[in-house]
Length: 245
Length: 193
Image (cartoon, rainbow over all chains, first blue to last red; front, side, top):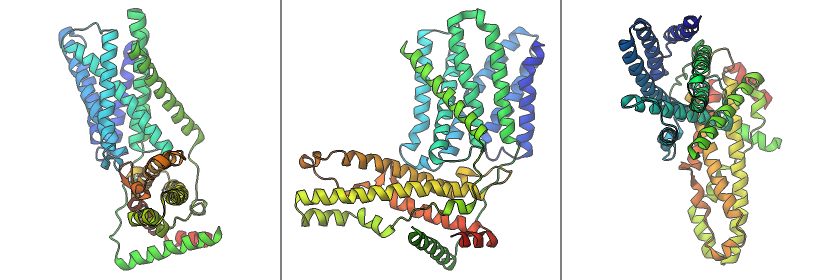
C-alpha cells in the first residue's frame, strides 16, 4: 500500500512528460520540461537504489539538490513568461531577485530559529529547499495578483505551472513548520501529506498541459495603406462612441 | 519568532491565492462576445493627452500666470488628466477582455504572448503609477503654497513606462486585433457599433 501511494506521483509525472512531448510544450516551457524529465529520471534512480542504503542516500540527496536548482530555474522561466513585458522596466527586473532574496532570508531565519538535524552539505540542501518553496509561493502569489489586476484568463501554461507549485509549496511549508513543532512523531503524516499534495500538483499540471497552447499567430507586416485603413476604422469607431455617449 | 510570523504570512498569502484559483475554477470564464466589449470603451482624446503632458504648456502657463493662478489652473488640468487616466485604465481592461473574447475556444489562448495583452498590461501599470502620484499631488491642497507646483509633464513617465507611447501601442495592438477578425465578424462588429 505504501509503495503504491509512493509510486502514484511518479506515474503521474511520466504521464505529464508524455503529454508535454505530445503537445511540444518543451518549446514554450523548456525549464519546466527539464524539471519534469529530471523528476522522472530521479524517481527511476531512487527506485533502482531503493534496497541499497548507501547508494540510495547519495541518490536521494543529489536528486533533492537537483530539484532545488531546477525549481529555481522554473521560477525564473515563469517570471520571464508572465512579466515578459514588464521586465523591460527597471523595477520589473527586480521582482525575481527580490523573491529570491526574501526566500533566502526567510529560510535562513527559519534555519537559525529551528536548525535542521543535518550537517555539512545536507544542511544547505534542506535550507535551500525551504528557500525554493518560499520563492515558489511568492511567485504563485504574484501570478494570482497579475491575473486579478489585468483581468487575464487563467488557462495558460505559466499560470498552471505556478498553481501546481503554489499548492505543493504552501502545503510543504505548512508541514515543515508543523514538523519542527511536533518532531518525529509527525513524520508519518508529513510524508503522506506531501505525497498527496505533490500528486495533486502533478494532476493540475496534467490538466493544464492536456491541451496544446495556441501559438501567437504571426501577422503579416502591415503595409502603410492597410495601416491607414485600420487607423481610419478605429477613428470611425471612436467617433461613433463619442456620439453614442 | 519574527521569521515564524513572516513564514505564516507567506503561507497565508499562498492559501489566499489557492482560494482565489478555486473561485476562478468554480466561477468559470465569462463568455464575452465581441459586441459585449466594444461598447464599453471610453474615448481618450490623444490631442488633449499630448497637450496635458507637454512640458512647453507647463512652462508657458508657469510664466504667463501668477503662482496662485497657475496652481489653480494646474489642479484643474490634473483633474482632467486623472479622468483621462481612468479612461485609459478602463479601456486597457476592456481590450484585454476583447483579446480573451477573440480566443474563446477549447484550446488555450496565448495570453501574455499576444501584443494586445502586453500593451494593455503596460497601460495598466502606467495608469496605476500615474494615478498614485496624481492622488498625492491633489491631496496636498495647501502644500503647493509652500512647495513648487509640479508640472504635469513629469507624469509622462510613471512606473518607468511612457504613458503616451504605451497607449499608442495599445491602439496599434487593438487595430491589429480588429484585423484578425474574419470579414463576417468584422461586419457584425461594425453593425453592433
